[in-house]
Structures are given as C-alpha cells and as structure tokens.
Image (tube, rainbow, N blue to C red; front, side, top):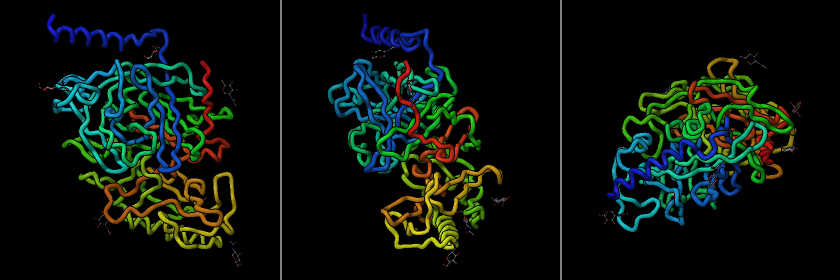
Length: 436
Ligand SMILES: *[C@@H]1O[C@H](CO)[C@@H](O)[C@H](O)[C@H]1NC(C)=O
Ligand SMILES: *[C@@H]1O[C@H](CO)[C@@H](O)[C@H](O)[C@H]1NC(C)=O
Ligand SMILES: *[C@@H]1O[C@H](CO)[C@@H](O)[C@H](O)[C@H]1NC(C)=O
Ligand SMILES: *[C@@H]1O[C@H](CO)[C@@H](O)[C@H](O)[C@H]1NC(C)=O
Ligand SMILES: *[C@@H]1O[C@H](CO)[C@@H](O)[C@H](O)[C@H]1NC(C)=O
Ligand SMILES: *[C@@H]1O[C@H](CO)[C@@H](O)[C@H](O)[C@H]1NC(C)=O
C-alpha cells in the first residue's frame, strides 16, 4: 500500500470518529467555560482542555478574534494533532489559501504541505504565520445552571503559533481564544460540532479570584440565586465592518469583530454633542463602535472623549464631587468625599449609550464607570484614543464586567443585560459545581 493510501485511510478513520464522537446518545444543547480576570494585565483568561492526552490550556479571551491559536513550539505533544493539508476543505474554511513547507524535524507547528493562517496578538498588535491544524478539544456541557459532562470535539480547527506571539499576554497563558464572527471562531465551530444555535454569551467577573463564565449555545443562563439572565436582555443589532480590523488580513476579508450602532451618548440623561459621522463605519472600515475584551477600559476618539469627560465633570460638580489630580492611565479623577456607595457602584452621573432608538439604552452605572485607584480617589475608567483611531468607540473589559452579553450570529443581534448588580447577582455567581 502506498503511503498516500495509508494517509487516505487514516483520514477516513478520523472523519468517522469525529461524526460519531464516541457517545451518540448525548448531544449537549450548550457548553460552558470559566473565565478569570488576570490581576496583572486585566486580561480575561479562559481554560479549555486540548490534545491527547488532555492538557489544560489557559487562553486569553478575544471576543473579536478570528480563531483559537496556541503556542505549539513549547512542548506541544498530542497523538491526535493533524496538520491541515494544502487545498483541503479545512484550509478553505479558514480562508488559508497558501501552501507551505517547514524545514526541520516534523512536529506540531512544523509540517510539509500544510496551509497557514495569521495568528494575531491584538495586545501587542503582532501577527505572524502559523500552521493550521486540528486536534481534540474538550469542554463541559451545561443545562444553564451547572456544568454537566465533558464533551469532545475530535477535530477542532486552530492555528499553531510561535512562542514569541505570547508576549504581552498574562503569565501562564498558551494562546488566545477567538470568539469572532468567522467560520472557524469558537462559537461557530462548537455550534456546528453539536448542531446547536450559533449563539454565545459572555459574563465577565470583576473579581480576580472568582470565575466569570462564557456559554456557547442558547440560554437559560442561570446565576445564583436562580436568576435566568437570558430572559431579560435588551436587543440591539450587530453590524459587520466590511474591512478587517486585525493586525494582518487578506484583501476583502471582513472584520470578525462585533460592532454595535451607538447613535448618541448621554450623561445623566443629557445628550452630549458629537460628530455623529464618527459613530458610523465608513467604506474603509474606520469609525463605529465595537466590543473588545482585550482593551481593559473603553477607548474613545478624542472629540468624543472630551465631550464625555466635560459633561461628566460638570454633572459631578453639580453633586459637589471634587475633581483631583489624574492617576494614569486616567485623566479624570475625583475625591471619594461626597460619593455615596450604592448597589450599582459609586453614586455618580450615569453614562448612557443610546442605540437604535431613544429607548434602547446601554446604561453604565458607577460600578462600570468608576475605577477605585486608592481609598480616596475614584477615576472615570475611560481613556483617550487620539484623534484618528481606527474605531471611534471601543467598549472595553471594565465596562463589560457583571453585564451579560449574548451574541446571536445567525440573526446578528446582541442581547445585553446592563449591570447584574441591580438584579442582586454577578457574573461570578454561576454555580460551577458539576451536576453530572
Ligand atoms: C474525550 O477524549 C478524552 C481524551 O482522548 C478521552 O479520554 C475521553 O474518553 C473522551 N470522552 C468521550 C466522551 O468520548
Ligand atoms: C519537508 O520537505 C523537505 C524537502 O523534501 C525536507 O527537507 C524537510 O525535512 C521536510 N520537512 C518536514 C517537516 O517534514
Ligand atoms: C431622559 O431623556 C429622554 C429624552 O431626552 C426623556 O424622554 C426621558 O423622560 C428622560 N428620562 C429621565 C429619567 O429623565
Ligand atoms: C466629523 O468626523 C469626520 C470623520 O472623521 C470628519 O471627516 C469630519 O471632518 C468631522 N467633522 C467635524 C465638523 O469635525
Ligand atoms: C453642594 O454644596 C453647597 C455648599 O456647601 C450646598 O449648598 C449644596 O446643597 C450642595 N449640593 C449638593 C447637591 O449636595
Ligand atoms: C450548586 O450546584 C450543586 C449541584 O447541582 C448543588 O448541589 C448546590 O446546592 C448548588 N449551590 C448553590 C449555592 O445553590
């Protein structure tokens, strides 16, 4: 038998394995993974099992990332690793047109006749080449209340990356989990492996010692004490930016990131004056509002930043809240004197992102606007993005904490909860005790 026949046999064998999945009687309707804020970097790190034998990988969550990438140069050993052969269906699924060889002994990340993609580190804005491959990934199923039994995806498509791409990421991390809107992002691959809805939800905890949660699939999304957050979401449209925002991309590739249509911004219910053309995405892909888990704080184009901070400072002054010296990276800080504490954070002027109608409002209360930098000082947790940023409003991690966001890829809708603190729960209140 020629070697190519052996390979063909091997491939058909794997194909059968991936369809039967070893347990035909159990098909999960949703999956769940934990996510923890890293204290040193404010990155959000999830944990997923991969390889044979299984290894737990810590991965920085990039909600707009195109796919999963993992450092394969540092002790990646797996009997189920399979490089994607040039011109295979897997390559076209990942838009990987090229074909490459690797000089050196064959190993995960270095094989001949494979296609490659460009794994991207959006924190250092570095992209490089990486071998496209499949391997086994294992995650927990869920009924929405607890994790259930583990399920395997035998041929999960991901990219290898060299170790240097980990620079700037939280310590102990081996790659990034891209939840973006592509055919090979985690949401779509997991949904198609188990034929559930192309929906996922993120709920980031503000705590660096207890886990928030990411659900793949539809709700319920239950948090202690038995609050199903999926039942009370406000819905807004998701927009596709026609031009990729990644560090490296191919011509004509749309952005994998999630954009929403902010039409105005209010402070204490008063609209601030803005150049509204900054709020829409132009034909070159500039402008608009996106959601990011890799920016720790919301970044605003300079004129928007100035309008927001001016209005906020005036409203704060009307409440006798005194401005004090800035504390990097923030410009606008206040004394805690005269700031009361409430269930939804420090009592400060509210910030409202107005979406497609005056009544579709993402409300940002003190819990998500104010950062306590020391006992006496609170800073407005927004940063100035300069006068020509690619995207005018980048909603960052701090503003997402303790809010549940559900992304529906099939209908292009975002469901958002605004702060769960007002409903007496938090993103750290998912019950991770396994019920299976
Ligand atoms: C999932 O994969 C692991 C590692 O190969 C294996 O030990 C386990 O039995 C598999 N589980 C199922 C349900 O197939
Ligand atoms: C790829 O092919 C070249 C030329 O045939 C060979 O020298 C090299 O060792 C091969 N590399 C791998 C990783 O198999
Ligand atoms: C906020 O402003 C809107 C429109 O400007 C108005 O309809 C609404 O009554 C105001 N709400 C409050 C609480 O002041
Ligand atoms: C508004 O923003 C657009 C897009 O950046 C810019 O071209 C235009 O000059 C701005 N208009 C004003 C009045 O600043
Ligand atoms: C602010 O302080 C002034 C002077 O002390 C006082 O008259 C006023 O009532 C205070 N306003 C608020 C909103 O507390
Ligand atoms: C968490 O779930 C476990 C398993 O279902 C259950 O026994 C436990 O009571 C739950 N914890 C709380 C606080 O409800």
